[in-house]
Image 1 (cartoon, rainbow, N blue to C red):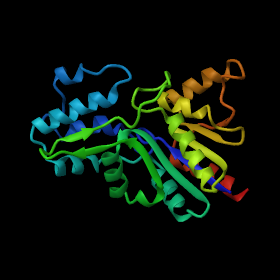
Image 2 (tube, rainbow, N blue to C red):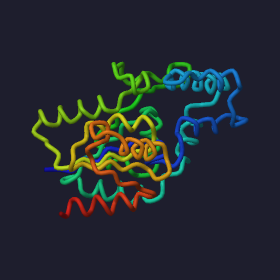
Image 3 (cartoon, one colour):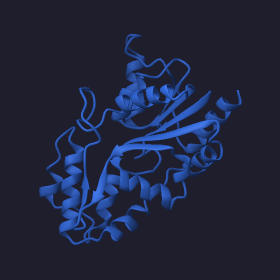
Image 4 (cartoon, rainbow, N blue to C red):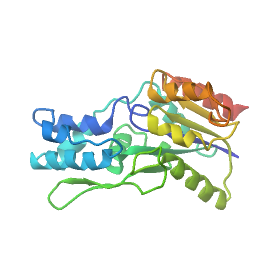
Length: 243
């Protein structure tokens, strides 16, 4: 029976937001108000399409975008944590579920030498078109009214677990590591012996604290353990696989 590590990406594996970090590749490192003010709540992926269009209009090359993305800082302790995971693949599976995109995540993990730790990445598909503009698509459509229109992380996690189960892999425990509001929904499908690890001081921790004070049927069954660095998570992971 293996352990499954599930990671969000922005403000979790990396210590910033990859979608806003990309703006640094622009000559003035800022977006015009017409793009900046075009965001509608829950429709981030469409907004990022406009951001990448603007970057393309400024004739920023794909190589320049990549080299800027590779400078995003990895969160403290995450390199050691993911290195440990990559060295213990017989005991640990590891996936990323993120509202970023395939290209940003792949570039960043490869540049940091951490790609081998991650078995699968579930995120918005991205590619460069023939004009050299990056196009970002929604990951899927879903019926969940708690999540952004392009991604319900609970649906992704449930489907992954059911496919793994169909292939004969059951998980003794699941660690869910995240920080944001869209990380709340997937915690509802965790079991009592699983662990949800919200980043200390971020939205997910506050939302979980609020739920824990409410009726039992709304609060997550999983144990809640806040983290400040990857070292906190590594300590829990080591204790779990050695128990």
